[in-house]
Image 1: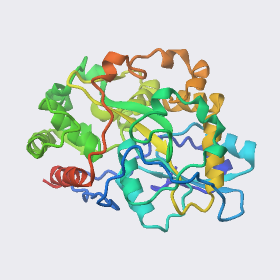
Image 2: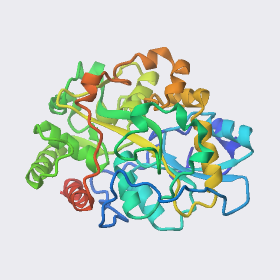
Image 3: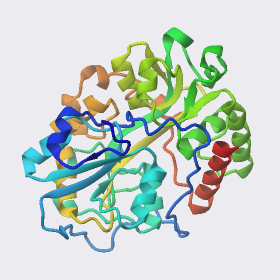
Image 4: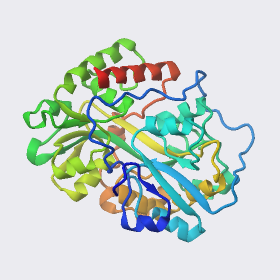
Length: 382
Protein backbone atom coordinates (compact mmCIF):
# COMPACT_ATOMS: atom_id res chain seq x y z
CA UNK A 1 0.00 0.00 0.00
CA UNK A 2 1.79 3.05 -1.22
CA UNK A 3 -1.04 5.52 -1.81
CA UNK A 4 -2.04 7.79 1.04
CA UNK A 5 -5.72 7.60 0.15
CA UNK A 6 -6.14 3.91 -0.50
CA UNK A 7 -8.21 3.21 -3.60
CA UNK A 8 -9.04 -0.36 -4.45
CA UNK A 9 -11.13 -0.58 -7.55
CA UNK A 10 -11.16 -4.35 -7.87
CA UNK A 11 -11.67 -7.01 -5.26
CA UNK A 12 -8.80 -9.16 -6.40
CA UNK A 13 -6.43 -6.30 -5.55
CA UNK A 14 -7.38 -6.82 -1.90
CA UNK A 15 -6.02 -10.35 -1.82
CA UNK A 16 -2.49 -9.03 -1.31
CA UNK A 17 -3.31 -6.14 1.03
CA UNK A 18 -4.95 -6.28 4.45
CA UNK A 19 -6.96 -3.09 4.76
CA UNK A 20 -8.59 -2.83 8.18
CA UNK A 21 -9.10 0.04 10.67
CA UNK A 22 -6.70 2.97 11.04
CA UNK A 23 -3.40 1.14 10.48
CA UNK A 24 -2.42 3.11 7.39
CA UNK A 25 -0.72 6.29 8.57
CA UNK A 26 -2.17 9.34 6.88
CA UNK A 27 0.95 11.45 7.25
CA UNK A 28 3.53 12.50 9.82
CA UNK A 29 1.82 15.83 10.42
CA UNK A 30 2.02 17.07 13.97
CA UNK A 31 0.03 19.70 15.85
CA UNK A 32 0.09 22.23 13.04
CA UNK A 33 -2.56 20.20 11.22
CA UNK A 34 -5.43 22.42 10.15
CA UNK A 35 -8.40 21.98 12.47
CA UNK A 36 -11.55 20.52 10.97
CA UNK A 37 -14.93 21.94 11.90
CA UNK A 38 -18.31 20.29 12.09
CA UNK A 39 -19.22 20.22 8.42
CA UNK A 40 -22.76 19.89 7.19
CA UNK A 41 -24.45 20.25 10.58
CA UNK A 42 -27.99 21.63 10.51
CA UNK A 43 -29.67 23.49 13.32
CA UNK A 44 -32.76 21.42 14.12
CA UNK A 45 -32.07 18.26 16.16
CA UNK A 46 -33.58 14.95 15.06
CA UNK A 47 -35.42 13.17 17.90
CA UNK A 48 -33.95 9.76 18.67
CA UNK A 49 -37.33 8.12 18.04
CA UNK A 50 -37.77 9.58 14.58
CA UNK A 51 -38.27 6.94 11.89
CA UNK A 52 -39.20 7.25 8.22
CA UNK A 53 -42.88 8.09 7.70
CA UNK A 54 -43.19 5.35 5.08
CA UNK A 55 -41.17 2.14 4.67
CA UNK A 56 -38.00 2.63 2.67
CA UNK A 57 -37.57 0.86 -0.66
CA UNK A 58 -33.96 0.56 -1.70
CA UNK A 59 -33.19 0.35 -5.41
CA UNK A 60 -30.12 0.80 -7.56
CA UNK A 61 -30.12 4.07 -9.47
CA UNK A 62 -27.49 2.46 -11.68
CA UNK A 63 -28.23 -1.09 -12.82
CA UNK A 64 -24.74 -2.48 -12.37
CA UNK A 65 -23.12 -4.99 -9.99
CA UNK A 66 -21.04 -2.43 -8.10
CA UNK A 67 -20.72 -1.08 -4.58
CA UNK A 68 -18.76 1.98 -3.43
CA UNK A 69 -17.75 1.53 0.21
CA UNK A 70 -16.09 4.24 2.39
CA UNK A 71 -14.74 2.88 5.66
CA UNK A 72 -12.16 3.60 8.35
CA UNK A 73 -8.65 2.40 7.63
CA UNK A 74 -7.66 -0.85 9.33
CA UNK A 75 -11.24 -1.98 9.90
CA UNK A 76 -12.12 -5.01 7.78
CA UNK A 77 -11.20 -8.70 7.43
CA UNK A 78 -9.15 -9.94 4.50
CA UNK A 79 -12.05 -11.87 3.01
CA UNK A 80 -15.03 -9.63 3.86
CA UNK A 81 -15.16 -7.99 0.42
CA UNK A 82 -13.98 -10.94 -1.63
CA UNK A 83 -16.52 -13.17 0.13
CA UNK A 84 -19.29 -10.72 -0.67
CA UNK A 85 -18.28 -10.61 -4.32
CA UNK A 86 -18.12 -14.40 -4.50
CA UNK A 87 -21.61 -14.65 -2.99
CA UNK A 88 -23.28 -11.88 -5.02
CA UNK A 89 -21.16 -11.01 -8.05
CA UNK A 90 -21.03 -7.38 -6.85
CA UNK A 91 -17.59 -5.79 -7.15
CA UNK A 92 -16.53 -3.32 -4.48
CA UNK A 93 -14.61 -0.08 -4.77
CA UNK A 94 -13.13 0.41 -1.32
CA UNK A 95 -11.86 3.78 0.00
CA UNK A 96 -10.66 4.73 3.46
CA UNK A 97 -10.78 7.73 5.79
CA UNK A 98 -9.13 8.40 9.14
CA UNK A 99 -11.57 10.74 10.95
CA UNK A 100 -15.31 11.27 11.10
CA UNK A 101 -14.82 14.88 10.03
CA UNK A 102 -12.92 13.83 6.92
CA UNK A 103 -15.68 11.41 5.95
CA UNK A 104 -18.49 13.86 6.76
CA UNK A 105 -16.99 16.60 4.61
CA UNK A 106 -16.82 14.30 1.61
CA UNK A 107 -20.37 13.00 2.03
CA UNK A 108 -21.75 16.50 2.62
CA UNK A 109 -20.21 17.64 -0.66
CA UNK A 110 -22.86 15.61 -2.48
CA UNK A 111 -20.45 14.37 -5.13
CA UNK A 112 -18.76 11.42 -3.40
CA UNK A 113 -20.83 8.63 -4.98
CA UNK A 114 -20.57 6.27 -2.02
CA UNK A 115 -23.16 3.59 -1.30
CA UNK A 116 -22.03 2.77 2.23
CA UNK A 117 -20.27 4.87 4.87
CA UNK A 118 -19.31 4.08 8.47
CA UNK A 119 -19.83 7.04 10.83
CA UNK A 120 -19.49 6.70 14.58
CA UNK A 121 -22.68 6.72 16.63
CA UNK A 122 -22.37 10.33 17.82
CA UNK A 123 -22.09 11.48 14.19
CA UNK A 124 -25.26 9.68 13.10
CA UNK A 125 -27.66 12.38 14.27
CA UNK A 126 -25.43 15.04 12.75
CA UNK A 127 -25.88 13.24 9.44
CA UNK A 128 -29.63 13.05 9.99
CA UNK A 129 -29.87 16.77 10.82
CA UNK A 130 -28.11 17.42 7.53
CA UNK A 131 -30.31 15.05 5.54
CA UNK A 132 -27.33 13.01 4.39
CA UNK A 133 -28.74 9.50 4.86
CA UNK A 134 -31.44 7.28 3.40
CA UNK A 135 -33.64 5.17 5.68
CA UNK A 136 -32.97 1.45 5.51
CA UNK A 137 -35.17 -1.04 3.71
CA UNK A 138 -35.70 -3.71 6.35
CA UNK A 139 -37.29 -6.06 3.83
CA UNK A 140 -33.80 -6.49 2.38
CA UNK A 141 -32.23 -7.06 5.80
CA UNK A 142 -33.63 -10.29 7.28
CA UNK A 143 -30.39 -10.82 9.20
CA UNK A 144 -31.17 -7.83 11.42
CA UNK A 145 -32.65 -10.51 13.66
CA UNK A 146 -29.07 -11.57 14.49
CA UNK A 147 -28.22 -8.32 16.29
CA UNK A 148 -27.79 -8.19 20.05
CA UNK A 149 -30.69 -6.36 21.68
CA UNK A 150 -28.40 -3.62 23.00
CA UNK A 151 -27.87 -2.51 19.40
CA UNK A 152 -31.48 -2.64 18.27
CA UNK A 153 -32.73 -0.44 21.11
CA UNK A 154 -29.86 2.05 21.23
CA UNK A 155 -31.00 5.63 21.64
CA UNK A 156 -28.85 6.85 18.73
CA UNK A 157 -31.10 4.91 16.29
CA UNK A 158 -33.82 2.78 17.91
CA UNK A 159 -35.05 0.07 15.60
CA UNK A 160 -32.10 0.57 13.22
CA UNK A 161 -34.07 2.96 11.04
CA UNK A 162 -30.95 4.45 9.45
CA UNK A 163 -28.02 2.35 10.60
CA UNK A 164 -26.69 -1.11 11.35
CA UNK A 165 -23.74 -1.55 13.73
CA UNK A 166 -20.46 -2.61 12.15
CA UNK A 167 -18.39 -3.01 15.32
CA UNK A 168 -18.11 -1.49 18.77
CA UNK A 169 -15.37 -0.80 21.22
CA UNK A 170 -13.97 1.45 23.91
CA UNK A 171 -11.37 4.19 24.14
CA UNK A 172 -8.53 3.70 26.56
CA UNK A 173 -4.75 3.63 26.78
CA UNK A 174 -2.48 1.38 24.71
CA UNK A 175 1.06 1.21 26.00
CA UNK A 176 4.43 -0.54 25.99
CA UNK A 177 4.85 -2.62 29.12
CA UNK A 178 8.64 -2.77 28.71
CA UNK A 179 8.93 1.01 28.50
CA UNK A 180 6.23 2.12 30.94
CA UNK A 181 5.44 -0.82 33.20
CA UNK A 182 1.77 -1.15 34.15
CA UNK A 183 -0.49 1.72 33.13
CA UNK A 184 -3.78 2.33 34.93
CA UNK A 185 -4.74 5.91 34.13
CA UNK A 186 -3.93 9.23 32.50
CA UNK A 187 -1.06 9.91 34.91
CA UNK A 188 0.96 7.69 32.54
CA UNK A 189 1.38 10.77 30.31
CA UNK A 190 3.64 12.18 33.05
CA UNK A 191 6.09 9.27 32.86
CA UNK A 192 9.56 10.18 31.63
CA UNK A 193 9.58 7.46 28.94
CA UNK A 194 6.39 8.88 27.43
CA UNK A 195 7.59 12.47 27.09
CA UNK A 196 7.49 13.73 23.50
CA UNK A 197 6.38 10.32 22.19
CA UNK A 198 2.82 9.80 23.46
CA UNK A 199 -0.34 10.50 21.46
CA UNK A 200 -4.04 11.29 21.84
CA UNK A 201 -6.74 10.63 19.30
CA UNK A 202 -7.45 13.05 16.47
CA UNK A 203 -11.20 13.17 17.15
CA UNK A 204 -12.76 16.13 18.95
CA UNK A 205 -14.96 14.17 21.33
CA UNK A 206 -12.40 11.46 22.07
CA UNK A 207 -9.48 13.84 22.48
CA UNK A 208 -11.40 16.28 24.66
CA UNK A 209 -12.57 13.35 26.79
CA UNK A 210 -8.98 12.98 28.03
CA UNK A 211 -9.05 16.48 29.47
CA UNK A 212 -12.56 16.10 30.84
CA UNK A 213 -11.93 12.75 32.49
CA UNK A 214 -8.59 13.87 33.96
CA UNK A 215 -10.52 16.64 35.71
CA UNK A 216 -13.30 14.33 36.87
CA UNK A 217 -15.87 15.72 34.43
CA UNK A 218 -18.46 13.86 32.38
CA UNK A 219 -17.06 13.25 28.85
CA UNK A 220 -20.55 14.14 27.56
CA UNK A 221 -20.75 17.41 29.51
CA UNK A 222 -22.61 20.38 28.10
CA UNK A 223 -21.04 22.75 30.66
CA UNK A 224 -19.02 25.43 28.84
CA UNK A 225 -16.83 26.04 31.89
CA UNK A 226 -15.87 22.38 32.17
CA UNK A 227 -15.08 22.26 28.46
CA UNK A 228 -12.86 25.32 28.79
CA UNK A 229 -11.04 23.67 31.71
CA UNK A 230 -10.48 20.59 29.54
CA UNK A 231 -8.93 22.73 26.82
CA UNK A 232 -6.52 24.25 29.36
CA UNK A 233 -5.59 20.78 30.61
CA UNK A 234 -4.98 19.48 27.10
CA UNK A 235 -2.88 22.48 26.10
CA UNK A 236 -0.66 21.67 29.08
CA UNK A 237 -0.61 17.97 28.20
CA UNK A 238 0.22 18.80 24.61
CA UNK A 239 3.68 20.00 25.69
CA UNK A 240 4.52 16.39 26.56
CA UNK A 241 2.95 14.76 23.49
CA UNK A 242 4.47 13.73 20.20
CA UNK A 243 1.36 13.73 17.99
CA UNK A 244 -2.37 14.03 17.81
CA UNK A 245 -3.33 11.10 15.60
CA UNK A 246 -5.87 8.31 15.27
CA UNK A 247 -3.38 6.07 13.44
CA UNK A 248 -1.55 4.24 16.19
CA UNK A 249 -1.14 0.56 15.35
CA UNK A 250 2.20 0.66 13.56
CA UNK A 251 3.78 3.19 15.97
CA UNK A 252 2.67 1.06 18.93
CA UNK A 253 3.84 -2.17 17.29
CA UNK A 254 7.27 -0.74 16.47
CA UNK A 255 7.70 0.77 19.93
CA UNK A 256 8.03 4.26 18.47
CA UNK A 257 5.00 5.34 20.53
CA UNK A 258 5.01 3.93 24.09
CA UNK A 259 1.64 5.42 25.08
CA UNK A 260 -1.44 6.23 23.02
CA UNK A 261 -5.04 7.01 23.65
CA UNK A 262 -6.47 4.35 21.37
CA UNK A 263 -9.54 2.55 20.19
CA UNK A 264 -9.61 -0.86 21.82
CA UNK A 265 -9.53 -2.87 18.61
CA UNK A 266 -6.48 -0.98 17.37
CA UNK A 267 -4.70 -1.77 20.63
CA UNK A 268 -5.55 -5.46 20.33
CA UNK A 269 -4.34 -5.60 16.74
CA UNK A 270 -1.05 -4.04 17.84
CA UNK A 271 -0.86 -6.53 20.70
CA UNK A 272 -1.36 -9.44 18.29
CA UNK A 273 1.76 -8.31 16.44
CA UNK A 274 3.80 -7.25 19.48
CA UNK A 275 2.94 -8.86 22.86
CA UNK A 276 4.69 -5.97 24.59
CA UNK A 277 1.64 -3.80 23.83
CA UNK A 278 -1.09 -3.76 26.48
CA UNK A 279 -4.42 -1.96 26.83
CA UNK A 280 -6.04 -0.42 29.88
CA UNK A 281 -9.39 1.16 30.52
CA UNK A 282 -8.31 4.21 32.58
CA UNK A 283 -9.38 4.37 36.19
CA UNK A 284 -10.79 7.80 35.35
CA UNK A 285 -13.06 6.19 32.74
CA UNK A 286 -13.38 6.20 28.98
CA UNK A 287 -15.97 6.01 26.24
CA UNK A 288 -17.86 3.32 24.35
CA UNK A 289 -18.72 3.79 20.72
CA UNK A 290 -20.37 2.01 17.83
CA UNK A 291 -19.43 2.47 14.19
CA UNK A 292 -22.40 2.20 11.89
CA UNK A 293 -23.13 1.12 8.33
CA UNK A 294 -25.26 3.82 6.69
CA UNK A 295 -26.51 4.47 3.15
CA UNK A 296 -26.05 8.06 1.87
CA UNK A 297 -29.14 9.67 0.40
CA UNK A 298 -27.60 9.85 -3.10
CA UNK A 299 -26.16 6.31 -3.12
CA UNK A 300 -26.10 5.05 -6.72
CA UNK A 301 -26.27 1.38 -5.64
CA UNK A 302 -28.50 1.43 -2.55
CA UNK A 303 -29.86 -2.07 -3.09
CA UNK A 304 -26.33 -3.47 -3.34
CA UNK A 305 -25.49 -1.65 -0.12
CA UNK A 306 -28.31 -3.52 1.61
CA UNK A 307 -27.07 -6.79 0.19
CA UNK A 308 -23.66 -6.09 1.73
CA UNK A 309 -25.15 -5.17 5.12
CA UNK A 310 -27.19 -8.37 5.18
CA UNK A 311 -24.10 -10.37 4.16
CA UNK A 312 -22.06 -8.94 7.06
CA UNK A 313 -24.86 -9.82 9.47
CA UNK A 314 -24.58 -13.54 8.72
CA UNK A 315 -23.05 -15.29 11.75
CA UNK A 316 -19.91 -16.64 10.08
CA UNK A 317 -19.10 -13.40 8.25
CA UNK A 318 -19.72 -11.33 11.36
CA UNK A 319 -17.47 -13.59 13.40
CA UNK A 320 -14.66 -13.48 10.83
CA UNK A 321 -14.85 -9.68 10.90
CA UNK A 322 -14.68 -9.58 14.70
CA UNK A 323 -11.79 -12.06 14.80
CA UNK A 324 -9.84 -9.95 12.31
CA UNK A 325 -10.37 -6.45 13.66
CA UNK A 326 -10.45 -7.41 17.37
CA UNK A 327 -13.42 -5.18 18.16
CA UNK A 328 -16.63 -6.17 19.89
CA UNK A 329 -19.25 -7.69 17.60
CA UNK A 330 -22.86 -6.48 17.81
CA UNK A 331 -23.92 -9.77 16.15
CA UNK A 332 -25.31 -12.10 18.82
CA UNK A 333 -25.62 -14.96 16.33
CA UNK A 334 -21.91 -14.64 15.48
CA UNK A 335 -20.67 -15.28 19.02
CA UNK A 336 -20.42 -19.11 18.71
CA UNK A 337 -17.93 -18.54 15.87
CA UNK A 338 -15.84 -15.82 17.55
CA UNK A 339 -12.42 -16.70 18.95
CA UNK A 340 -13.12 -17.75 22.58
CA UNK A 341 -10.04 -15.89 23.79
CA UNK A 342 -11.44 -12.71 22.27
CA UNK A 343 -14.97 -13.33 23.50
CA UNK A 344 -13.76 -13.94 27.07
CA UNK A 345 -11.47 -10.89 27.19
CA UNK A 346 -13.04 -8.32 29.56
CA UNK A 347 -11.20 -5.54 27.74
CA UNK A 348 -13.03 -6.46 24.52
CA UNK A 349 -16.36 -7.32 26.13
CA UNK A 350 -16.35 -5.35 29.42
CA UNK A 351 -18.55 -6.33 32.33
CA UNK A 352 -21.70 -4.39 33.13
CA UNK A 353 -19.79 -2.67 35.94
CA UNK A 354 -17.06 -1.56 33.55
CA UNK A 355 -19.56 -0.44 30.93
CA UNK A 356 -21.03 1.92 33.51
CA UNK A 357 -17.70 3.83 33.34
CA UNK A 358 -17.72 3.73 29.55
CA UNK A 359 -20.72 5.72 28.32
CA UNK A 360 -21.52 6.08 24.65
CA UNK A 361 -20.50 9.39 23.10
CA UNK A 362 -23.79 11.27 23.09
CA UNK A 363 -25.03 13.58 20.40
CA UNK A 364 -25.29 16.86 22.29
CA UNK A 365 -27.13 18.93 19.69
CA UNK A 366 -25.74 21.20 17.01
CA UNK A 367 -24.90 24.12 19.31
CA UNK A 368 -22.96 22.08 21.86
CA UNK A 369 -21.26 19.97 19.18
CA UNK A 370 -20.08 23.21 17.56
CA UNK A 371 -18.71 24.26 20.95
CA UNK A 372 -16.73 21.01 21.11
CA UNK A 373 -15.43 21.59 17.57
CA UNK A 374 -14.27 25.08 18.56
CA UNK A 375 -12.63 23.72 21.70
CA UNK A 376 -10.79 21.08 19.67
CA UNK A 377 -9.59 23.77 17.29
CA UNK A 378 -8.08 25.62 20.24
CA UNK A 379 -6.33 22.45 21.39
CA UNK A 380 -4.87 21.63 17.98
CA UNK A 381 -3.79 25.13 17.05
CA UNK A 382 -2.95 26.52 20.51
